[in-house]
Length: 466
Image (cartoon, rainbow, N blue to C red; front, side, top):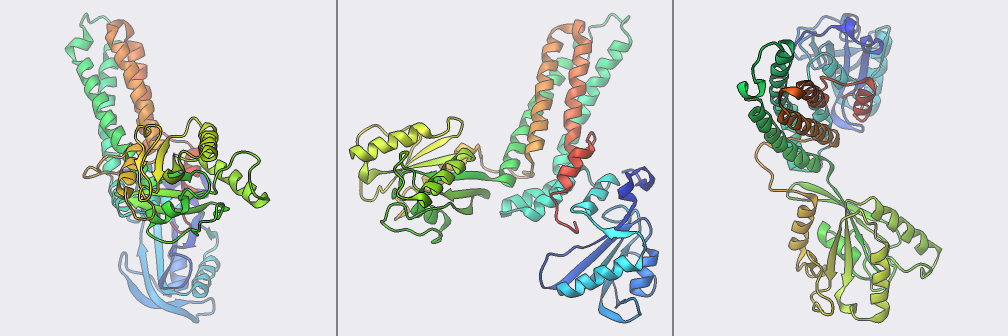
């Protein structure tokens, strides 16, 4: 790992920064963190004396007039052996919001040029100073934001470098192939069938297979991180709110026999085998012009908005009312209006008081009773199948949509490279270019190739103090 070079960083990254690094609100301990090129003046002003490196020291934190603001632990991590690669000072005080604000203000007053840190700026500096690659930096935020145990464990593996190591191995194999191709282009007088001699075609096929395996795991990791947006839709009084309550295991939505009880969206995040599902109960859908009042019309409009943004729509049917002409006609109207691009899972409710009759059951449909819980496990497994989830392999890493997209681009370039390799030595230049583009796509994941706009987008989503 290279030594950090502060002089090579953009202007704002040469500032000394400070922020409250613990969660908002009261707590037993609160942390104020500072990072910069030289914190000796700040340490002397607030702690009253130099600190032994990487050793917690109990002492008073001093105000401008030398008065004691609090007693706590101070830790100094000299550069480059710190989280950011710069000098880092952590003040661990009692966790009162007012006290932490006093400490923050004292730090800003004590060292000229000190400024408040932007969201994610400590981790951004760790990336810029080669302490973390970009995938690891993103895993910091993913670990904090993890909504399930499986997501937290996977984010921890990514932070430890498991994902980056896999991308690194793919990059190394791609570079070796590039070197072979470039060497052949540099010595065209050698009458050697490069592709045969180097076994390039076999290497390329093996590389595509390995990338496919990484892509499959990345898709699983992205699902763990982002979850699935599931919208329960259907006519009034078919049991949508009852189904939400059954899935959540709690009385979240009001359930009555009165049609149109739900007027607005009710959302709850649940987990199935560690996969977060963001389930939304919506107002009952009616044919145009049949809403009872303006409030219900607004609720129905929001239902259609939620449906358009869903990853999966649970189209809930009432088995007890099937065969009623008015009900069946309204079902047809709702079914025809569902967006074509959104996967729809047909769910037939009230199996405890009715049986499937009439038209054949739709392929893959689920038969259940939201009241008794019959069939709920089948619905959970159907949702996982729709999401593309497989039993989580040991060592699964967290991933983001941008990682999946970068791997897909790399795969597309490698497939093009295979097509050029099939053409033999006549297409070596095109083969070299496709390998270069594949290598570039892989480098985007770890930040080997990145731009300021991407970095700004990523780190702006972090919490302040991290």
